[in-house]
Length: 123
Image (cartoon, rainbow, N blue to C red; front, side, top):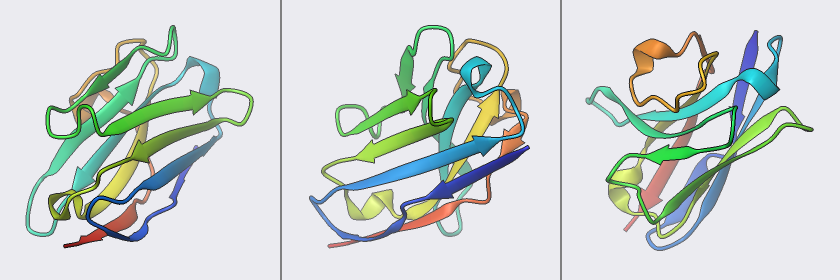
């Protein structure tokens, strides 16, 4: 199983970035996808998730209304559209996959993880 996150980089506060997570080695259409992030010196935290069953999303309060998670089953890829980014969004972003349909916020439910992509937001 491979999860390849991409799309990170440098953005100015108020700008946008779109992260992608390409999945191989597992059945994507039956994979609930999650995004997590880890800021320097801090623990990894939940950002967003999307159910495989009906694309129901869930979001952390810190990103609700600014970030949008989506998926394209034809491309085996999940996305995280990051809008109105803030310096506090600076972190390494990881994508993860789980088999259950619930878009859980706990990382312990996710069996497969990518390596992460760095997002830096300047003020």
